[in-house]
Length: 239
Image (cartoon, rainbow, N blue to C red; front, side, top):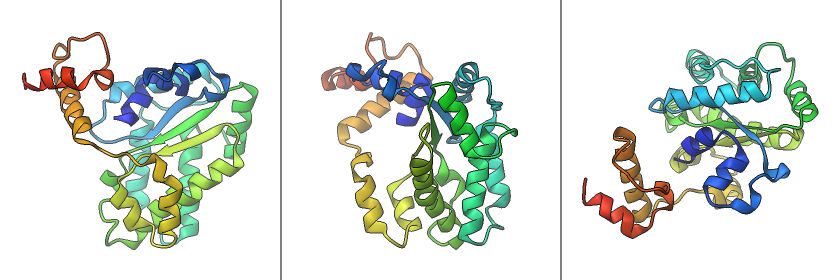
C-alpha cells in the first residue's frame, strides 16, 4: 500500500502531504523524486509509467525505460542461479541500479553529481522481492542476494551519495531468513520502520481493494486511509 502511494504521488513531499503531514510539504530538504526499479507482479503498470514519465520530465539527462521494473526483474531471474559469492552479488546490484538510469553513466557518483547540479534527489523503490526470490529459506544464493541488497547496498548508498536514497519493502520473515549474521542488530536498526497490521488496517485494505475493482464503490471526498473507522465499517456492510 505504501509502495503504491509513493509511486502514485511521485515525490517525497507530495507523499507526506497525502499523509496529512502538511508541515513538510514543499520543504526543500524533504523533496525527492521516487524512482521504482522493482515492483510486485500485480502492481498497476500505468502507475509505474506515470512515475517514470515524471522522472524523465524532471531529469531529462536520465534515459529510463518505462519497462525498467520488468527489465530488472528479468536480469535478476537470468543471473540469480549463477552468482556464487557476496562480491559478485554486490557488483550485480550496483550495476543493476546504475543501469536503471540509462547506459551512459560510469558510476553512481556520476548520477549523484547530476542530481546535485539539478538540485534534485532520487529515492529508489524496490518491492516484489518475494516473487523473485522464492527459496530464501533453503537457497544460500538467494539468502546472499537479499542480505547484500538490504545491508551492503543500502548502507553504501546511505554513506556515499548525498542525493540518492533507497527504500526496500520486504516481508519480515524474508529478512530474518536472509540475514543470518547480525540479525538482532539489523532488526533493531529498522525496527521503527516495521509495518504492523492491526485489524482496522486490514479492514481498511479490504475497502481499498474493492475500490480498485469498482471506482464508484467508495464515494467519499477523502482518501480511504483517512476515513474514520465508522465510515469504513459502513462500507464493509456493503461487501
